[in-house]
Length: 70
Image (cartoon, rainbow, N blue to C red):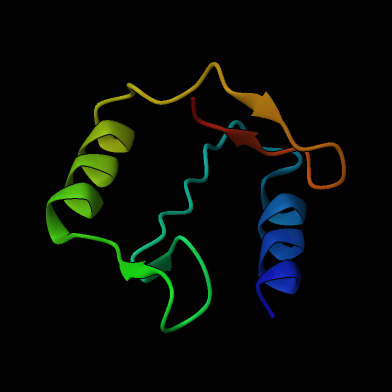
């Protein structure tokens, strides 16, 4: 499902100078039971960094042409 969402965002922003940020607010570090929830403080820091223009300079995902922050 997330793949379709990413493709839709890419198509919507193709001809516009728009930055899209995807923030993981859920589970990280493995499958349910082995990983942990993303801490609210980390989610807030990611959102604040996006709003303040501090994200960028990451690696380009070949298929989706998305940058992943370093």
